[in-house]
Image (cartoon, rainbow, N blue to C red; front, side, top):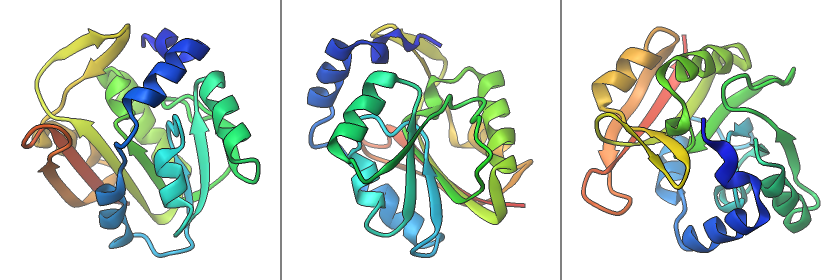
Length: 189
């Protein structure tokens, strides 16, 4: 995974500027239909903290990132917040959560890494725990700004997740262009 982009202060600052005004509010509204308020929630890939700040209004949220630069940014801007340095594949934590959320993070994983992440998410969720993840819709993969981006279809995501999760919601939505994104919400089987 070409993680170098998020490792430097300059690229993190560039990303924060690029992502300004983009948030997961509509995804979080959908999540709230399935995960009760107050639930213990892990956000994978909190980045600049935009969604973390929305999530903390309704959930006992723990943010995470694999970039120490993003973690420094998150901690300095949210001194009362809880953040973990986590890789999206191994999710090396002994904590158990009621929900796991990510917004355009898991598409940086190759298929085998995504399967490993799905299995690990299953392990760190409590009984009937909820996942909520967004992906870019499309075919194939590319390197964008030094980062691996893996595109998915609804059917591929269904096939990957349904072994461990009951799919509660799976549909396309628009981030920049019509139907350029997919939201998946599932419940641990």
